[in-house]
Length: 467
Image 1 (cartoon, rainbow, N blue to C red):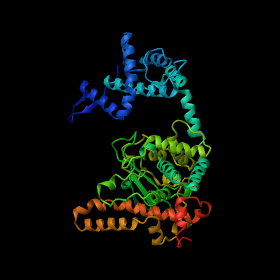
Image 2: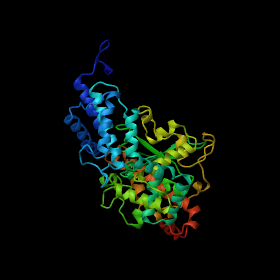
Image 3: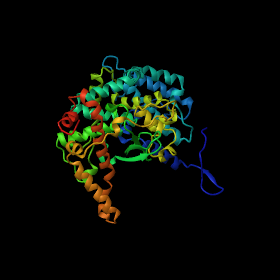
Image 4: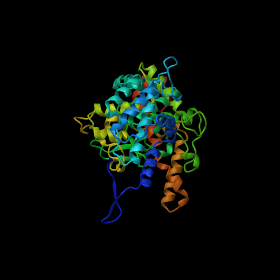
């Protein structure tokens, strides 16, 4: 018999959840998953329920003793002996493909959660049952080993730096976009789908006195949705990197130059609707973000060029690298969980801005941390180089006017002109753009000689004031 859950309805009265309320919780559990995922799971869940009904078996799994019947169906279905067509199968053996077997497991796991909620039972973890775990490993092993071997075990720190340096040296349009995808995902320990729809208007900066012994500029943005922490604020942040080729701020500056000078895209005036729909990673059609397939194609090409083995989930590789970087730099597990948005303390961590702590920011930017402490200043000699206005205007001709318009909007809004609030709200993002262009120019001082083919450096070197 399952345990009961009580809620307070008054100062001295507690009652159990009603059947209707438990159904609501089941709907909430299902609603926490994207519709596309629910639609993917539904056919497998229906096949299991139909199979149980046709054999006169109760489908519900509400305790560990119910797992064997689900294990039998899972094994039969993977072998092609339980009916049903969904999923990729071997044309000869009819055995389910490992990738699809993983999806079926996830669908069953979600179905069991709903059954347990409705029955007021404790949660049942399928993988705690030895027989289920054996079946699970047997039919998913191929995909699991491929993913671990190709996208995690072989992509180490030196591989990451080498790939980023090669992308910087190549410096064509695709390489510039790919380098930024890599840099942002690593520095924010983010999945591809968490940055693909990022807009320029989401960026802002703040000075923080907690990074090393000197104040540091922290660049941040809010993710639209996390797969684990949903419906809570999720701020991601990064600082300038010690390896300039892997620095997301530099990559942002080079992408700005590529899109709005080289490619001739029009930078909209601050405050208008088009400004808030200005995607950092633009898709094939105007006003759309980059697709998953475009993202994967770029990452795969970069890994292949760097002789790094890749698996089916290559867009996840940068998130793996970010977590490993923090571990290599001595960050505790709590910092890694918090930076990556893994479920740990959804209440406390969601109120901390930025989401990354000082150790995480330093580790992800590849600054040396002495024994886990921030004893080394966030500093590099070329960060202090003065960049003349002429160089900024040469690399981003539109930027001075956009910055002036945003600053004027801020001043007008501060004076009480509510019609300028939308313009003033764009100022932090425009300031990030300015800092990104400056950072890319500063980094070019130390990288120009060895990277003559880079589009940004070619244009910058043509200006007489760049020395």
